[in-house]
Amino acid sequence: MSTSTVVNTRAIVTRDAGRGRSAAPSAGRSRARMIQIVLGIVAAALILVYLSPIIWLVITSFKDRVDIFSSSPSLFFAPTLENYRQAFLEKGFTDNLLNSTIVGLVSTGIALLVGVPAAYSLSRVRKGETFMMALLAARLLPAMVLAVPLFVLASSLGVRDSYFALIAAHLTFALPFTVWMMRGFFLAVPISLDEAARLDGCGEWKTFLRVILPIVKPGLASTGIFCLINSWNEFLFALVLTGRHTQTLPVAIPSLITPIGTSWGQVAAVGTITILPVLIIAFIVQKHIVAGMTGGAVSAE
Amino acid sequence: MSTTMERPPVRAPGPEGDARTVALRSRARNRVFWTRFGMQAPSLIILAIVLAFPLVYSVILSFQSYSPVDAEADGRFIGLDNYIRMLGDAQFGRAVLVTIAYVVLAVGIETVFGTILGVVLSRLIRSRRIVTSALLLPMIATPLVVGLMFSFGLNPQFGFMTDFLRALGLVGDGGVLDSAGGAFAALVVMDVWEWTPFIALMVLAGLSAAPQAQIQAAELDGCNTFQLYWHVMLPMVRPVLIVAILFRATEAIRQFDQVYILTGGGPGSATTVNDIFQYRVSFAAFDMSYGAALGVATFAVVATLSAILFRYLNRKGADA
Image (cartoon, rainbow over all chains, first blue to last red; front, side):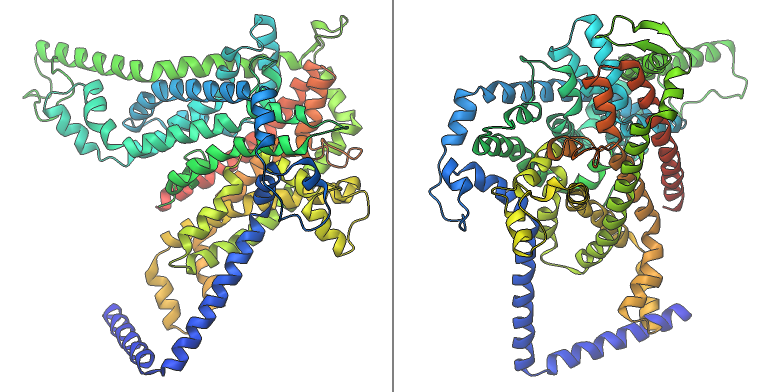
């Protein structure tokens, strides 16, 4: 009874409000629009200020040495691709780009291949909670705690400066992440679908591959993308486990910064190339970003 | 393929069943076990090799004396010496203090700003998507390059942030990173810049999941907007907010990349956070066993925080 009263009042209130608005003179409406436009401009300016560090980095990468150090307002300059040419064609940053790509693709591939079936299996049993918590703990584990033993082990096995060592190190976060994230997507698929497939004579593997996996394809894609980004962005393992032949992009950047004679333009160019793919990809998986950032522990939407 | 998997509708007539049904059923159970095993085992094996084994090895290492550059430290067991050394290490104590100050300040500011930003975002309708996309960029960008961006902005010779602060008369010729306070403040500002949107997005997610009926009831009872947010909606998003803060805390404790490239821990030891200190011990002085002991101690702290986090995660799951 009380609920219906509330609903009625609400209806009356909204109708009144609607009538009041439609009766308002058009001068008021145009002023409201003016306010909206001004607010929009202020908001756009704030966003520009907020993103200024990124913008500054990108702009610097197109400047030559003189323009970088000129103290006058330096938004007007002749853009040059010289920094990119020198960094990637002459100083060999293309190799680092390649290393980053190889390590990212292989570690993501292994994590998906191995982690997705495990995630499915864990989403269909009751007592998976402890294992999941252990996996999340692994995800929260400070990289520095693992860096020391991995370094010692890799040194004594003689596999430092190899893709193998770095990929193994990246699996320490990629695999727990994959299982957590994919389990969330699998949990959203009703178990009655499994049962229906089972009645139609599918085994567990067949149910998983033919029925359930196609449903979670979007989730699979964003999990893979987050694995790629995490591996691409990773710095500490790459710093201690790679050498001259396997350095990834983030590790190569500090080596360009020296106390004397740093060519900041090239640093900016390498930095820009490093974040560019990540920023583009981020737009694609925007919907799952909170889930991705928390390792699948919290899912928005 | 055979079809002897669990089939709920086709059941044996009696609860006891004859011998044949029992045998069939145990075979089916066996097969289920082996399928599960096939699905989970590869992950478990890989995690055991790359994660569990190194962790155990790290604990063992922390009771040894080992350094690849020191012939004296050949890996003999020295009991708790590394941990005792840790307690008396003034540099480590300083690093812990710097880390605590950093985590509390950065996460605290992020929480306040992020909550406000989340509320603002929830009121935007048409422009929310664009604004959110812009806010996402810093936290998804490579952390090392985030440090690099601030290194560019704060460069004493050509940084635009230095120019701006100089115009306000806040910095001298040496630039912001030259002074202990300036460098520390720069780190906090950088973290706030990078991670405030994370809190905001979590708050936004919490707000959009909040039950509308109570909000409308409060509106009808004559709450003004501030009262509505403070007394009605904030309690609703509190579980999500706590999870967000704990996540941020566990991440801020292990801050390394941005500090490494922006200040390198300097000037002096003003910005030597825990991970930078550990990096110096393990990979500059190559005192591996002491580094392992420091890592184990850090792990204990993070594990405690994680345990609290799990409790909240579980409670949130129970509410939903």
